[in-house]
Amino acid sequence: MDLDAFRQMVAKNPRGFLGRFGLGNKLLQEGGNLEEVVEHLTVATQLDPTHVASHLALGRALIGLGKKDAAKPILTAGIDAAVSGRSSGGNDLVPEMQQLLRTLG
Image 1 (tube, one colour):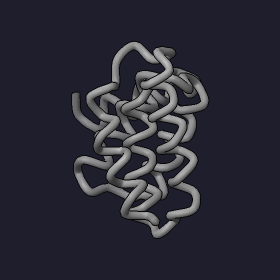
Image 2 (spheres, one colour):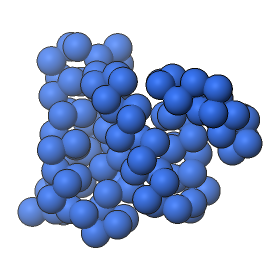
Image 3 (tube, one colour):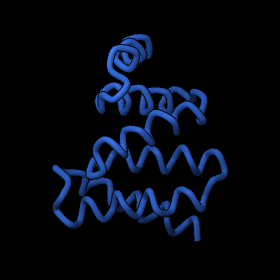
Image 4 (cartoon, one colour):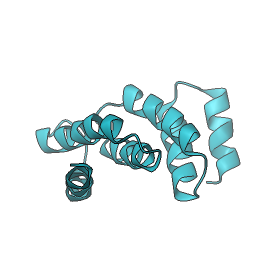
């Protein structure tokens, strides 16, 4: 899907997880505005606290904005969701999140 399609999803349903995650993730992949990425992915992690990929993408965006202290609990929550079994998948993302946390100190 393209950005416009995700924007339409969010406009129709601002509390819809798929639109928020999709738009935030697509913006992140395409080098979009990181503030907007954080806005959409923050809502996505609130709507589904166990979606590991949302935490990873939000952590990346926060790091990109220099908000390392804000990224740490987001990445930790994503790891916890994956290893606790509460998430439906996402275990493959844990090593990357752990590496990001290590680089943050």
